Image 1 (tube, rainbow, N blue to C red):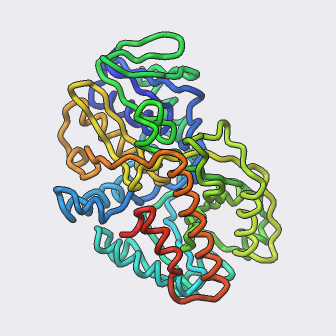
Image 2: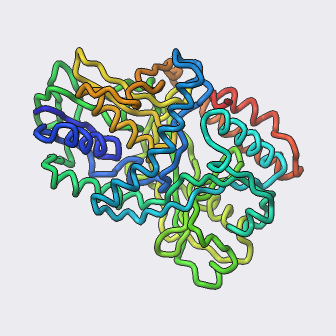
Image 3: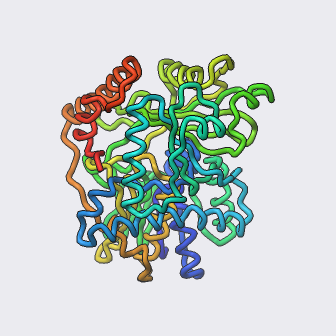
Amino acid sequence: MDLAIIGGGYTGLWAAYFAKKLEPSLSVAVFEAEQLGFGASGRNGGWLSSLIPGNRAKFANSSQGPAGSRALQREFIESVDAVLEILEREGIDANQHKGGTLSAAHTEAGLHRLISKRQADLKYGLSEDEVKLLDRDEFKQRINIADAHGGLFYKDVARIHPAKLVYGLAHRLAEMGVHIYESSRVTNVEGGVVSLTNGTVKAAKTFICTEGYSGPLLGRRQLIPINSSMIVTQPLDAHAWEQIGWKDLECLNDSAHTFIYAQRTDDGRIAIGGRGMPYRFASGTGGRGTTQEATISQLLGKLHAFFPGIHFTAEHAWSGVLGVTRDWNGSVNWDPSSGVGSSAGYAGHGVTAAYVGGRTLAELAFERETERTQLPWVGYRTRNWEPEPIRWLGVHAMYRLFGMADAWEERRGSAQTSLLAKVGSRLAGLHE
């Protein structure tokens, strides 16, 4: 076999797609331990966005300097339209709609954070028309959130249906001659041999594309699974939508430290997510994604606060995990001597990152030098996470600080970011 790909999510599927585009005669197989999209690819918030997986200031400290970080940001911006063009060309319907995204500020402190974020965005490659500051009235004309003080609008973001994208890509790959094997768990990769629970496969090249499930193959302290939870409401009636607005189908998040992410779905619901229980001891992945009742209540509470007077119920709820490195920066790595590569550590920004990462892996492995193979996340390395129980305590302490900071700012109507949040941000390495 020319190429074995481990992981049937977006990264693995895009890597297979571009490998076959580069060399159509390749024999390519995708091995998925569960079913396609079992991980974050099937359970995400449906944002095809220009958010990069990591801290731009840290990428700017690479050998390429600030120019490299800006090039990475521009690649992600341009990739949004590139993905949409491929879906159109390949006839893949993932309910895609490019409406941009809105970031809502609920407090003066939150608005000041968004103003600072916009300044950083402009520094790292966005233009004035790609990220716009909205005042209270401008924001509420788009989405009528009760306590919005204003916010930001990013134009280069599209809504997608996560599972439809997975299965649309898989169907196209089957037409291209890629073999896809579900319920095929890989336990080891060494010396050109891919070991599965029920046999072995020899492959000239192997890509590890398992994101939050990468611990057994990439190292349990190199990347940890962080939990993300979603709910989807009942379909809302025309009167509710008239009150809410949201006619342009933007994606939505907020400036809280324990932020949410949401979309208006194609069938008239709201899908909204948040971190819930952030991390399970010893990097547990949580199986098939049962969601805690407390998390469901928290997410419904957000909707009730956003849109008072509208009744919401959670018709469906699920959880999944995303991959996070110690400094929250993702990376693409290729070792020509072993013939093994990986792309992981998307830190919750994986829909576009998986496209860029999978494409870059294919270009590296098949020796195509492009603008992507020169980006600063290629070959990027970070230190390991701390051993248990230190990392469990650290992750939970960080999210506890963020939650306390949100409560403090909202209760006092604060105009300044809480010191607790600044400590949590420094602890996590999130400050740009």
